[in-house]
Image (cartoon, rainbow, N blue to C red):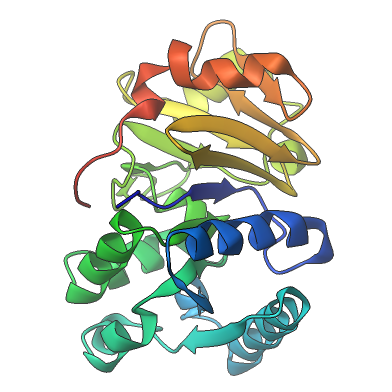
Amino acid sequence: MAVGNLALVGSGEYTLEMLSLESELIESGRRNNKEKVFVQFATAAGLESKESIEYWRTLGAEQAQRIGVEQKFIEVFNREDATDSKWIKEIEGASLIYFSGGNPKHLAETLKGTLLWEKIISEFKTGSSLAGCSAGAMMMGSDIAFPVLRKNHVSTGLALISKLAVLPHYDRYFGKIPNLVQNLMFNRNHEIRVIGIDENTALVRENGSWKCQGLGKVHVISEKPSKIFGNKDRKSTRLNSSHEWISRMPSSA
């Protein structure tokens, strides 16, 4: 059975701007005989207020209604929640499993080594699409990138993709910073590749190939010189052939 699609998203989860992407991810899961279910994790917002959690629940419900699928909002906000076996059953057979934004370190620490994360990977390997936006995208890599000037800047992700760190909201926060400075800020380990993903933009793996989708671009800032790929740029297809590091898909997290 085919592995599902994977999307690393710079921002815009559950919005009209990303409706096309999320619809396509659902449809991909459906083609792999998954159910019309949109599983949504707001775990990265687990340290925030109840109002913040409800914001994600409502936004996700509205998007699920637009697409015409069932929403399953998974109430896993801390490590204790993640060990509750009932959530394993809830995500089974979903077309799309999506992690929205917040605190990437909290998200990774909540899920790391749990049976729930193992189940998520199992569903992904059997055809469910898997997506993470902002913090959700950051935790998919092996390294969570923070500026080196930040206290406790070293953090590890769940390593769905090895030797990778993701910078979401790239055009808003980092786009005007010279490439050399960015390398000094983020590329602590030269074996780790750092990519920036613009807002309302996604780096999507489909059928073994990577593409840029959305309004902005994907920036490989650890390359010298940096490489930029856009959804209308044919060079985006070269992400798969010329960047072997990003084409690797580990067998487990």
